[in-house]
Image 1: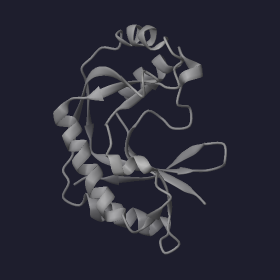
Image 2: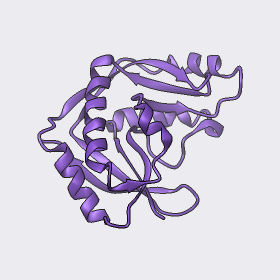
Image 3: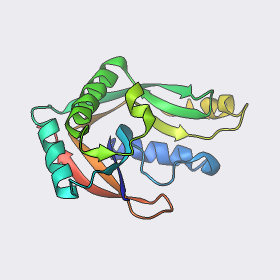
Image 4: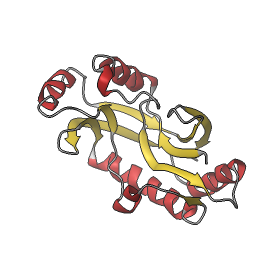
Length: 179
């Protein structure tokens, strides 16, 4: 079954910075998706809904949600230093979380095979490097300190990605504007 994921694309400036950094660590890059903030992890649609209806539900979920500024304030790690990422400020994270919760409520009965992480909530972030071997995170963090923080961008839409084959390739399916 086809998988989808929903997120926020940062500005082209932020995407360029993240891609430039991640090319230094190709073995730790997230190559299947552009730099993004995940709002809803990979899922499949239930048999009762199609892509057009999915986009309609997302338009309903985001109705009245105003565009907002996302400020990336610091570097951080999780999963026992296996992932290095850019972390939004607490205010930006709260805005992102509110948007993710709206989407989660609207899609609850329409999707299946959602990752168990969804029930734990999201931690807003943009991945710089992942699957880092033990002991390498401090080196990668040190190199990442060259990224000029804070960074900011306007979130005026969400995006839906569709997995296009079994090799983890994804394509942009749709962009849903915030009001």
